[in-house]
Length: 242
Image (tube, rainbow, N blue to C red; front, side):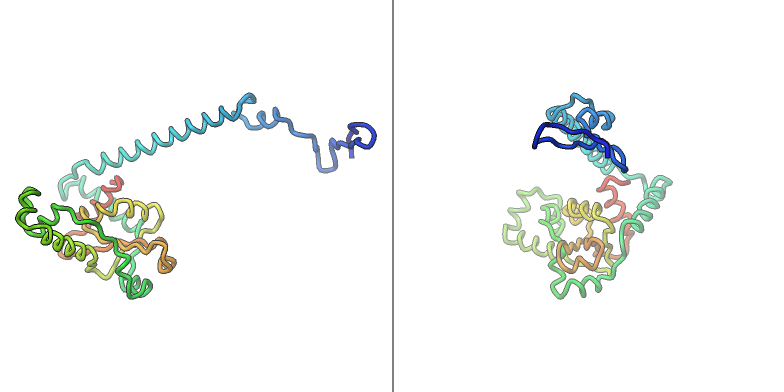
């Protein structure tokens, strides 16, 4: 082994410079910066902190732009039904539903989650306009409506509407295949329930969730109408995907 000695007397040390496996030469700070490519040799901690902050700000701006784009797309009026533009959107949504969701029998969820499975159904506070619809008095102002029915009667109507949010008519529910979609469903739960009229089952961190990919399901309580027009297309527009 090649090398040299450093120091004197008992403090003398042998410093190797190479062996059969190649050079063992110490790597200097300049070497590290040189190998880093685009990192200047003079860069310090404050430079790195500023660079990190700039990157984070750029990422925040990019995320904000994406959210704004999704919002604008979701608010754009839909084309008329049965037009080429409508048919294109409907075709895309049908493709995405097949791609993004697993069809699961509701009885399977009930069996795995146990007799208290309904506790995993998400509910939300009914809006006043929905309570008015319940009485067939949507055109009333809030003040007129509250005066006509009183707090107790309105609370009873809200309780009934919450129970309706727990009802799932069809024996099939649709499980989100990936975590991103599951989180979007959780994030937009109020709109999905109140505006889109779908039901949400979220097994969360329960043991029952381990039997599924994500354990977050959508269900429908209705019949005799076009589910894509009423539920699926509005859902994908809510996410800003169509």
